[in-house]
Amino acid sequence: MNPDMILIRFGEFTMKGKNRDRFDKRMVEQVRRSLRSFVRAEITRTYGRIYITLNGEPYEEIAVKLKDIFGIATFSPIRKVANDLEAIRSAALEVMQALPSQPATFKVSTKRVEKQFPHDTQEMNHLVGGHVLRETPGLKVNVREPEVELRVEIQPEGTYVFSSVVQAAGGFPYGTNGKAMLLLSGGIDSPVAGYLAMRQGLEIEAVHFHSYPFTSDKAKEKVIDLVRRLSHYSGVPIKLHLVSFTDIQSALAQSGQDPLIITLMRRSMLRIAERIAEQVGAFGLVSGDSLGQVASQTLGSMNVIGRSAQLPLLRPLITMDKNEIIRIARQIDTFETSILPFEDCCTLFVPKSPSTNPNLAIVEQTEQAIAGLEDMITEAVSSVEVMRITPEVRSAVETAGEDSWF
Ligand code: ATP
Ligand code: MG
Image 1 (cartoon, rainbow, N blue to C red):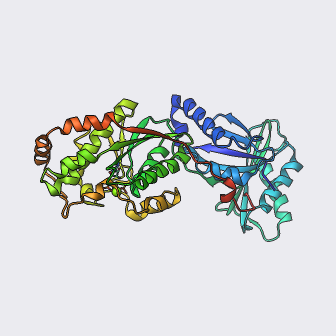
Image 2 (image 1 turned 60 degrees about the vertical axis):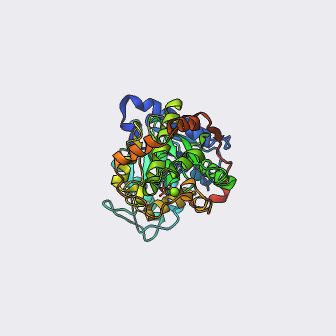
Image 3 (image 1 turned 45 degrees about the horizontal axis):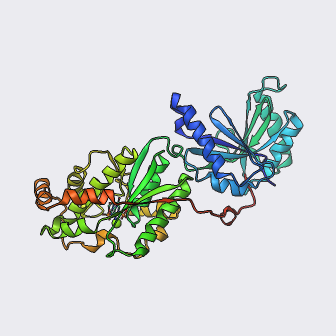
């Protein structure tokens, strides 16, 4: 049995006053785009909610898509019936019977928006609850801590009956909080950082530094694949800026400051990323740094590295440990790609003992002593290769499953 409709609830952004209309509109756009292959599904917006009338389109497949849309807090499959007591009672029983496992306790919560309806909320709780109890041996009412809360919403256009509340991605609709430039390596962390930034409503463009021919085409393919996976969540194409870092990296490697080389590389990366960000109207940079993970991610290193850029540097993973990051990477389906063993430009010249507490003055002197560094940075910015990565077409059927929708 398929539900009649889906009720979609938004997240925290419903609180944001005058921005709300913009958020709501973006939300509807995202839902429409994501469900465009379900041609019979009708999408309507009411204050703070979206309803999807399924008209026979498969709930399970649509649910898989809704779970990945940023800004959706929860959703519920619902039965819609006429404002008629008997119709409401039988819908209530159907909803209870369609639960994946039978609960021991429940309660009915009625909300009566249509004041013409002849029974008030208390009466309805009893009339509907009594019917369900009579038809379900062993079931009891527990008003305080029910296993299942059966909701009955009597609206002017009909009555909605539902019980399950499915958690979705949460956050803000994609792109409603501005644009940021993601520094994307081929590792585990930066795709997760990108995902979390996107979930918070940031539109992203990605920048990747390669040292072709020392890094291979395979490494490039890997980064393209990661962006493609991220674009599944944006629902729209993501731009990838590929920057040749070979000359800069060689120049830095010849500076004779082995322990500082990672610090120096990161600073040049930030400078380049910042210039590209400014060209495309991005007001922040996002990296996959996590405190203490490697030498370049101590507070001392982050201080010296961060000073090379003016734009805010966002680090969504800063307080997460590796296991948490890996858990999210698996969940968003970037992990398997991230662990493919292709060289990253930074792994090429890893010093034996990278500094965990670099000295800013020495770092700055070293940079000044490298002839033409500024020109190389300018050259790197002007010769970026830009790709537009579109979401892959995924079959929802593969991921959909369960028979029951409540
Ligand atoms: P990741 O798993 O994202 O590679 P990591 O823990 O391996 O992170 P580093 O390799 O030290 O840490 O990189 C720290 C951050 O610097 C990355 O998360 C990423 O944001 C950025 N970064 C590193 N290498 C590159 C690269 N080649 N291109 C773009 N950004 C990079
Ligand atoms: Mg890395």
